[in-house]
Image (cartoon, rainbow, N blue to C red; front, side, top):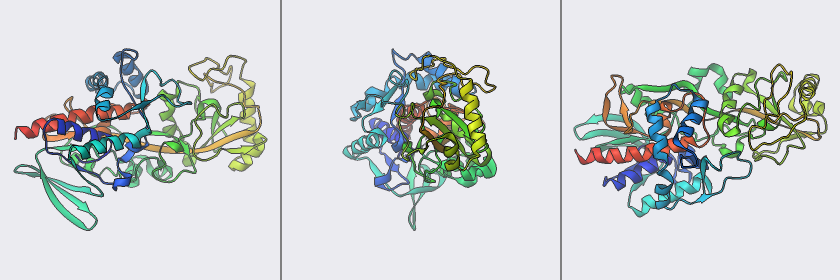
Length: 446
């Protein structure tokens, strides 16, 4: 297994169930293991309360229908089995956190979050005597008489192992700024990587150079609004800014640029990174007032606060007259109504050229608050094509013998633009189990 996040761990457990001898190669140190998965907290899964067709409809509504619909149906159908399988290894659940809008019916939250989930899996691997090697990266994959020769690098040491089958679960290329810049230009330099610094796309590039078929959107990514004061890498979930539906968002010119109330937050929060990336200097500001504070999960940094909008603009280094004008114009077009953040409340502005279609309350109760926000990249939507058995498919449309893929490295089959909260972990869990099972089956016949 190349990669030790959720997809890799699930693949390793599944391969062990299939009777295979398993080795997990993890780029990070033991204390930091798990890639982006340690920053997660839930997965989306179909159930009798959340039928398969509704999950698919939700997925298409955010990412479009230019995805592998057959694979999407397969993953959604298989997601029904995921919670029980996870529980067998010791995973436990907790109720949705306050401030996570409309997820109780659709998503399952891991007790203790993604780090606890990974610890459960790794403890299970240890009990089963599955070997894990840390602080090791794959630098080459070559064909071998017995399958594949995989060159590993740990510190200054290099050595080669042989494997009958491989599962690539090593993530996308989001921490590779040169690759990001090749797609996005200089704007990429302003992006923050809220996940691990080690997802450099090295294994993805190896597979593509070996003839794997590309799938997904090379410029696409899961990208949200994060506090602009966040670190370059590894900010995690706590840097996410959840205030956007509660107020307005302006760019550096103090102009709104998108409907902050377009749709339920779990279906639309991941569009904001791309929207901010398209603004000058890739910076924006989420503005709200005192009556809103406490209605959402706060980010790790305190909001910037001021008694007036003009003074808030000064603290944000924005034009005070322009920000006051924008807020005043927005307030003039709000109307009385019932505010209900639990769902689309229809509380819309009237007559505003760029409407806010839900949760449109005036920003008029001091003090006033703001978060400066930048694009926070979680993972990229360029990957390798796979079939329903997680086999990597080459440019001629044939399965690559003995190479399987799971998680972010193949997420482009199912995600091209937007994102559905929790679905990345669904992809990793379901496809990880399939990849491990099929890799074990393949190895048993060789």
